[in-house]
Image (cartoon, rainbow, N blue to C red; front, side):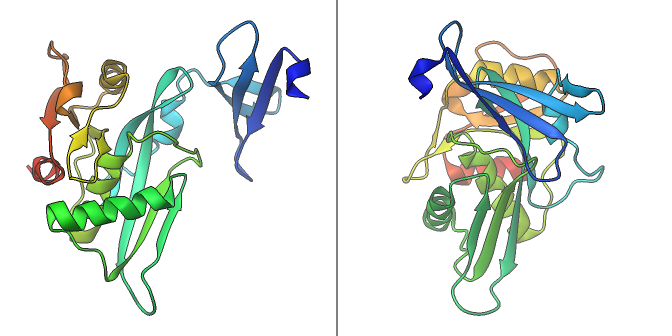
Length: 227
């Protein structure tokens, strides 16, 4: 019956969470696929003007397997923490579990890591999670997930001031994503100091306070994250 109405809105939330995401999938008088972020209070819903702060409540000390990426939900860039855990397989076949991400794409990234970066996880269980319970449907999370997996495997934390985004291809190349400039400006606004991005997404002019490190290959990205 959606064709009978002017607007279709969905309220989404995790069980036990006080946060609500309002998603517009149809809007005759404005853009669709927009998101609104709200907190449920005793006085009703209250708008969250800086939703990135919800998903960036990280531990004060860097932790292995944790990284921040800049995704694009609706019409706005959004900073979200991704977490990866690599553990030695105990029995049976290795598990590949992803919350908030496409599990099949995670399996593809594991193959790319093995073939083009020399990082083998064939004897490890792999868990990947998007903090905050949001679903990410674009491919900009490829590069940060690869970095988080390598970080968890080596038990070496990534810098807490690092942000990363980029698509990873089957041949090991790091491909650009849409709205790169907007993503970098959002990271700059949130106080991040280093951004690891595809070479084609590097800005033409330097951004004050944000050092952009362009990469072209997965192995190059892993080396840049360690430096």
